[in-house]
Image 1 (cartoon, rainbow, N blue to C red):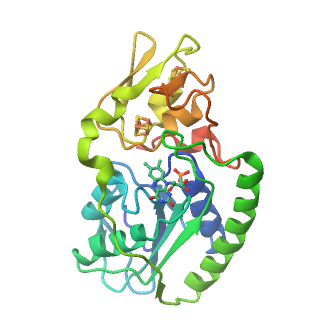
Image 2: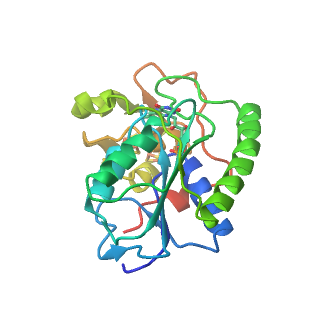
Length: 254
Ligand SMILES: Cc1cc2nc3c(=O)[nH]c(=O)nc-3n(C[C@H](O)[C@H](O)[C@H](O)COP(=O)(O)O)c2cc1C
Ligand code: SF4
Ligand code: SF4
């Protein structure tokens, strides 16, 4: 890959991909690329180029997959770097976390904003209901358009909060042992294909979780049969999926 400008995205339930696609369209169809293992080679950016990162806030910090990707990517000097962090509540610490990771590589963000969008974390709470989600999306569209105009104008503005400790990953191996499937599972394999970090393998027609989960909630949220549960937390909770994104668009691109 040897592109001057592009937008990198990571997304479990589609909000961040939606935001990345809308930003891309507003910025003259910037190419989009998923932040997954093995997705980068070569250099990106350069004088006059814009390179963006769009991803969800996880515990006010970076998804591990995003951190690993950013640590590997080679960014040419002079690049205008921007980040849009989608979040259900308060997640601007993720903007600061990305800036910190970039500074370790000798780069830094020129522009960074949190973008409130419907909250998806079904494992911890009941995700936003459709009416609330629709209102939140209307506001998000206006914000994305404003962000795109500022990025196009080369405005320098980083709005962040202090980075919080990323407690999520303390017991990463244990996190996915609470996933299970019931008899409604048809063995369709969607969960295996949509997991951004290859943490699911189908065995005898049933998903097996492989203990390096990102907690992106894609598998539980996109299951067409609603066959997946997380312990006894999720039986009565909604599943959130961005209504403007199809499951196919989130499948790992390798
Ligand atoms: C593991 C996990 C941790 C999260 N932590 C936060 C958080 O700290 N702050 C916040 O505002 N939203 C948090 N959320 C909500 C998501 O950031 C938000 O819904 C996001 O838009 C989902 O993006 P996606 O649809 O691209 O996956 C969290 C969601 C998950 C799955
Ligand atoms: S997406 Fe649902 S139905 Fe399909 S294999 Fe996974 S758990 Fe089973
Ligand atoms: S196993 Fe499920 S929750 Fe964990 S990273 Fe994969 S899709 Fe996301």
